[in-house]
Amino acid sequence: MLAQRSTLVRLGLLLFVLAWLFASDLRSAIPIWLPFLVALGLELHFFTGAFREAPSRVPDRGPQPVDLDLYGYDPEEEELDDLAEHDYEPEDDDDYYYEGPPRHPVRSFVVGLGIIAALALVLGLVDRNSGWSGLDDSKQAVASRRLSEEASRVAEKRVTIRCDESGGRVGAVQHADGIAFVGGTVAYLTPQVCFDLYRLTYKHEAASNRTGRALAVLAHEAWHLRGVSDEGRTECYALQSGVDVGRRLGLSTGTSRRLMRQQLAENALRTGSTSEYRVPPDCHDGGALDLHPDTSSFP
Image 1: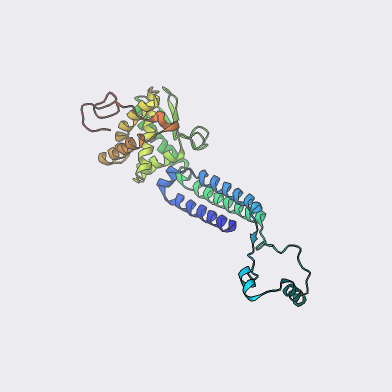
Image 2: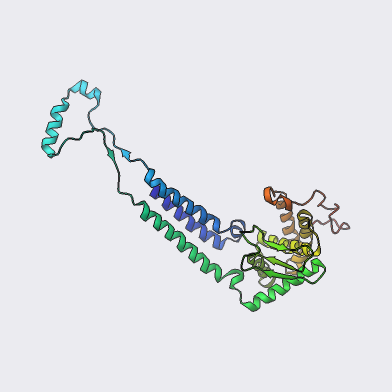
């Protein structure tokens, strides 16, 4: 039973990795290390469970009491006949356990770790040759300059956007897609955000929610560089500025506005550690944070 469950977990991990590679929305919603961590935990659970699993008890196949009363039965005579026929010594205990086929939990665990490691290696090789890391230095440099120009427009001063390939400043560990010092001149974005913006600008490809999120992150960090520190207020301004940023990077005004409205709707769902990014109540058309109160379009 444990072996079947372990096989299903490995198959599920394989299917998830394949889906993660080809489904852009899934890549933006779930960090790839999470399913690998879950799979490793389940392999450990199956490994330890193999030593705790109780052997199966074999039901008594002998005559039942009602049959003995009806037809008669001499247990001692039957046992002697059976021993004479098979030539073995009687057991001390009539009840016995069937251990089932031999289990090899260590071998199964090693196989599981090997599969997880192999999938992680394949994923690393694919990711290295795709995304932002797959672009040559000249393309990265051109894209970074373009993103810096857009951020400078929002910040109303000359600023620089850098894509943090090392993951030391932003990423899954820091739970941030971008970071900037308030009033500074440099902001860092994750390679995934940079690549989404590159695809929009130079490939004219938009992945709906991912593209909208990338635009919001770029504008958000630009507003920090402009001097706004409050996260909710910054996000409100970013979603409004993101419309123009998206339009300048290749989207139609209608599409860009739709993506920012989608981000605004999702912003209302922020809770827990991300609740500080929730926009204030006056972030609405005609509200105190409306950057264009003379128009009826918001954001």
